[in-house]
Structures are given as C-alpha cells and as structure tokens.
Image (cartoon, rainbow, N blue to C red; front, top):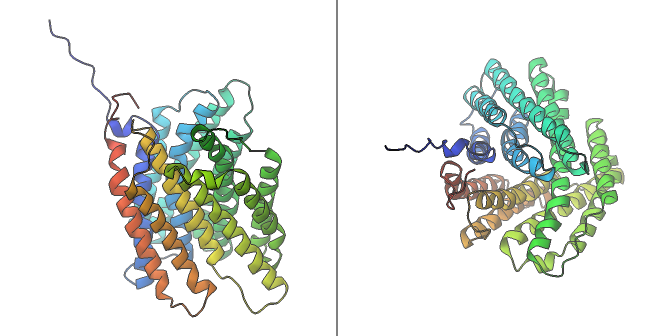
Length: 400
C-alpha cells in the first residue's frame, strides 16, 4: 500500500510575514516610482501631490512591513497563540487590494476612496487579531507589546482620517492625517521597537554587554511625539522645539549607551545602530528649525528633518529589520552579505541627497529626483534579493 504525503501549504501563506513582506517589497518600488511620475508629470492624481506622496510613504509602504513584523513578533513577545491564517491573509489581501485600487485610480476620487476603504478595513482587521493575542496571553509585563499595538492602531486612525479628508475634500484633515502617521504612528512605533530590539539583538551578539533599556526615557519620548503632533496640527511649528529637544537629547543618550562602536564589527547589527543615529539627526534638525522660527532667524531646515526621519531612520531601519527577519525566518544564517550592506548605504545616500537642497539652497532641486532614483535602485535590488524568500520554502526544511 502506498502512502501519500499530506499536501504542503503554499509557502507564501505559511507565515504571516511572508505575504505582507512581499507586498511591502512591491510597495517600496511603486511608491517612489509613482512619486517620480507625479513630479515629472507622467502620473496625474486627483489628490494634492504632497498628500499623495505622504500617504504612499507613511500608509502605503511601511504598514505592510510593520504588520508583517508584528504578526510575527508580538505572539513571541508574550508567548501567546500565533495569529490565525484567516487574520493575516485577510488583512494582507484587503490592504494589498486597497493599495492596488488606489494606484489604478489615482486620477479618480471614487477609486481613491474605494482603495482607502479596503486599506483601512484590512488594517482594522489586523489590529483586532493582534489585540486578541495580547489580551489572551498569560499575565506578564506587556508594556512594550501594548505600546507597539497602540502606535499601530493610531496609524489605522490616521489612515481613516485621511479617508475622511479625501471624502470631504479637506486639506486640514489630510494634513492632520499625515502628522498622525508620522508622529503618533511611525515615530513612536520605531522608537518603541528599537528600545526593545536593538539592545536585545546586541546582547545576543556581543560578549560582556550590559543591556540598557529603561522605560522612563522612552515614556518621555512618547509624550514628546504626542506634543509635536499636537503643535504641528495646531499650526505652531515655532514651538515644536520644546518636544524636539528632549527627543534629540534622549536619542543621543540611548546611542551612547547601546554600544554603537562595538556594533560595527557585525554588519547586520550595525545597520540597526546606524539607522537609529538618523533619528537623532532628524530630531536635532527639527529642534533647530523650530528655534529658528521662534527666534525669527532667516533660515529653516525645510523638509530636511522630515526626510531624515522618513528616509534616513525609517528607510534604513526597514532595510536592517526586514533583512534580518527575512533571513531568520527563511532558515538562513543571520549574516549581512556585501550586497545588502551596500544597499543599506545607498539608502543613506538617497536620504542625504534629498536633504541637501533643503539645507543648502545652492544645491539644485534636481537632487530630489536623483534621491528618488537612488531609493528606487536600492529597493529594487533589495526586493530582487529578499522578496523571493517570501514564496520559497525555508532552506532548513522547517515549517513556517
């Protein structure tokens, strides 16, 4: 009698990070390609150009990686039940479909609204599934897991507010939604994840390492993010320095305590430490630019702080974290090869080139297009290397 092996599941759906990381990899290319098309006049949009760019980067790209990471990490952090397939496949499907409809209908308000409804619905589904995991996990210290959940939930709120802004044709709601995406969703989330993961990863690699991650400085940073968002939405950029200076000081303090110099001997670890430096650069620039407004100086940093935070901190940390998760959960060694290392630095170059015309007016605006081109090349090459890991079986033969 012959025995047939049970059918194996399609690898792309075998673990929550797989479909979401694949969609994120695609988005990392499309978001900038569309933005360059808008800048060049080849792509027409019914949205204001700045609002379209803001949504694509804050809500169209990063949430796919964020949710893929959280669906994997949060159950591990609390030793809880894994998120069910229905939840992560449904969430990925709705958000991916929503983004696709939005791309196809950028010139149509009706299709933009339809895409946003699908995108928000998928995000809310994800938050409900993650909340169940946290609620039903055994009693323990859940401060950090809930912090990441609330930050991501506020991202869903911002996504919904953007939907309302489009529906009501309100520039104020669109601007508020983008402020929420930056200051109540992504910045607190990335700070919280770095607070947990950077020293922990470092302690796993470096000997005689003292793990430093006190909560009080983190809570101060989160309050500062809330304050910056409130002042920005209220139209008071001349006062945001009161939030930005504590953010800068505490980020620099964490950098000094987490052992950045020792991390440079391990590339996969160094990427996380170096990406975190961009957060300090961004907060310092925000503070100086706000003080310049307050003191009526004839200078400001323009959008340089925004891109130091978005392209520098988020973009570089995305390369570092997504590469690490992709390698580890595909059964490969946690090693950064030369190609990934150079792609990481290409993202740094793209961020710097985008900032230079803002900081030094003598630099031509063509640097903006060049910056977008470098980002496009970096993430296209990154996706060509790491996206196939999402649909191929693990190399060690293990499930997941």
